[in-house]
Amino acid sequence: MADNKSSMKSLRAYETIRDMILTGVKRPGTRLILSELETELEIGRGPIREALMRLDRSGLVRNIPYKGAIVATPPTRKEIRHIYDLRVTLEVKLAIEAMENLTESDFSVLDSLLTSMETLPENHYHYDRQFHSHINEASDLPHLCTIAQTLALVVESVLSIYRWETDHCKKFNSEHRAIFDALKAKDADAVKKNVEKNIKNGLDIINETYDKMFRIF
Image 1 (cartoon, rainbow, N blue to C red):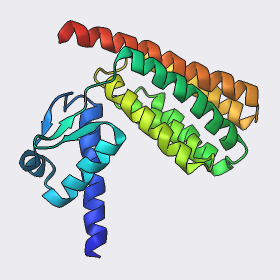
Image 2: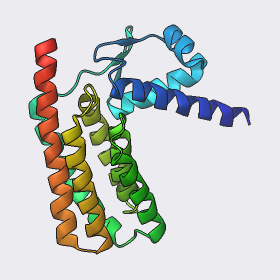
Image 3: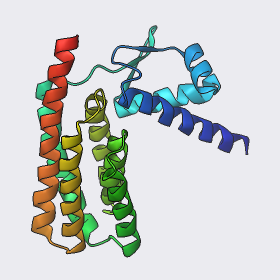
């Protein structure tokens, strides 16, 4: 029971710190000091240390010897382009594999996520990633899903520094609905086309975000 409670606290710490980074509360280069996180999260140091190690593996945090944990610096534009190329190749494959496995229950979950996104919530990115993750996991290729999640987290650390504009959210919502319809119709060509379009259009948001970052910093 004690181990289970510790694991739950570690998961809660991980999710809370992750969301602080993804929403820009904790900026790149910020030191994540254990004593301060203890106070902010009201969780002990053990679970927080485990959460920081997990965040290090995801690429959002760097654990540096003798310095501690620091919010990772976003990747360069060149690296981002390579990441997007990899994401397109990988997530198209995962979606095609998932197409044959998705059940009516899965489509109900995806439709609910789409409905939430269409209300244009502040945490739109959260529903966006849930939508893609649910599709990826239906592929039944867990190791590739882990790679896809890591690539997405690195990108989200940039995407979430600024809130997406309403027009961006509406465009992504339309693209997500097209992916949903293609999956339900089991149209592999349409799945490939719409997943690729959705991921590549995210690169436009990345470029806009980087422009803002460079003007500020």
